[in-house]
Image (tube, rainbow, N blue to C red; front, side):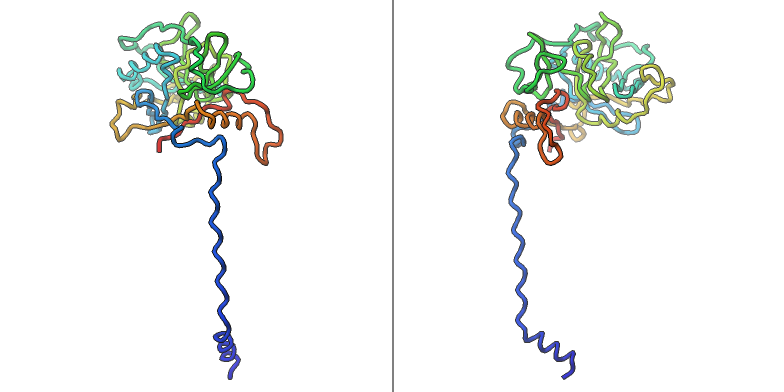
Length: 299
């Protein structure tokens, strides 16, 4: 018998090797204390979302903070309804580590009828104990206390007053020197380290919940305070619409995370004391802008 036939014969006579045992299915990881449950996510109403479409097709979506600056936000809704930003408005100022600002760079475009001008100085509001659902462990550097409202906004407070702080992606109303309070036509968003010294000096009217990267990566203006020197540098705004005005198929949908439960409080604590193999020294606290309530696209 040839060597090849012998080898084949021996192989046929040998018992088959047992099949390897299947690997055990990985056990489902238990949810961490700060993980959200499906019921923790609340859909933001369509009339609270203002969608700016920029030249080139990108969009920036702002959630409006009507409870904290109601007159300014009413003005903003009227400006959108009047299509005020659709012609001639642009992003005309981008200052590094500070703000991106948009509106009418010429300051000559007339405002639509029905706006309150000037609106009251809605820089803070009467504090209500029911409004804050979770608080930070440490005192805020710019306020006596800080926490998070049930409707997903960060809140700083002092005595009987509270306000939305100037965190990254918050939207404020540009104004001239006091007593001017701004109409709502000229807006800016924070694109750098939180300029908390602006708190209680300017009305905060919203938060960019989508598209902040389209503003934060723009070329910095070379003029004073980051203003663009020429019209060609400005980024035109094509339109501004409340989501409730858009066709149903085009409406963006976002959700904020509820703050009135132990899961969110555990999440805040995890931001105050980072754990895991990388963080070897817990901070023992967090600045309010470092723990903004999460916002996500609706599933």
